[in-house]
Image (tube, rainbow, N blue to C red):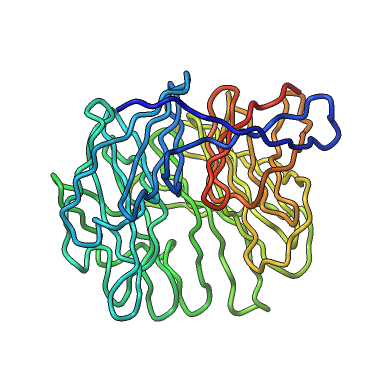
Amino acid sequence: MRHALLVVLVAASLSGCAAEAPTWRAVDLDGLSPSTVTALDDGLLVGGERNSAPALDRISSDGDRESFHLIPHDPYARTASLQSTAHLGGQLTAIGVQTGGAHGNPRWTVWQGTLAAAKLTNHPQSFFTFGGHDAGPLLGVASLNDQPVIVGSRTTSTGSRLVVYTVQGTTWSAPTASPEIVSSNPTRELGFSAVANAGALLVIAGDDLSLHDGLQQRPVIWVGTDAQHWTEISLPKPTQGTGLALATGVSCTGAHCWVVGWVHGTATAWQVRFTADAKATVSAPITLAGEASNDTSPSALVALSDGRAVVAVNASQPSISYGCLDGSWRNWNTPGEMSAVATTSNRVAIISATQLWEATIPNC
């Protein structure tokens, strides 16, 4: 069923460019509480939950909304919230989560379908596929060798290790061990925050915390040509000092990526370009507007609009920073802290609290 799109107007401000201040519009999702938003060629894909059940809506560029038919089979899938969706080669893969069990742990569910059919089916997995004593969070869905993969982590006695889950038919599995370069050990603890594809490459944003030289933390990315071959690349810091230094978001188009994060209380962005043989060139760090909040885990998210970075900065005053072709940056406030961001050629959509907001990206 298709529904008309209703918007509510909310004023916003643009730092340094008041004449171009955009207007945020609250998108009516007919009771859907959004957790994830993904850009499509002709609109947005919004996932979450509605009436205590998983929900996925497609919002076209002309404002129509179509609700997908979701078929749960796993008990936890019936009340899950969709946390990540990816459209890869006509196929649609989604991850849902619901807390449950004696310890209230996350219970992950996986869904597959197509945009054309507007339908997703949950395929139950064995308990230990995504669960068990060493279960860790799932970052999202990506592509490897033209097949969908789910990227996440599992815990070890020394910290997290990166895991790439692959699928055969409808059955997902992961290797019992990970390469040393993406595994914590007694001298360093690794954190994994976000995943994106740079062409055929997997790019993971996160941090590397040294445990033997005064707890020095570095923002890093890991680049993989497959699930077993990885390169770790350090991202230069704009400042020296104490406090968190980590990459929290990554978005790519072709071989060009933007990585964002926080370094010693400063929101930071880096451009990364890859050659045909997966060698990387990293730009000098770019300091973005916004002071760190009291939150001990500040984050930044990024999406690309015609190659330009559009960064959701969760500072003390949450804002969007976007890059101009001349190298300058603009900034405008948002309705609140953001948990997801997606862009089309001239628009940006964010999720703040339980609301989806949309605005036109101003000209530079």
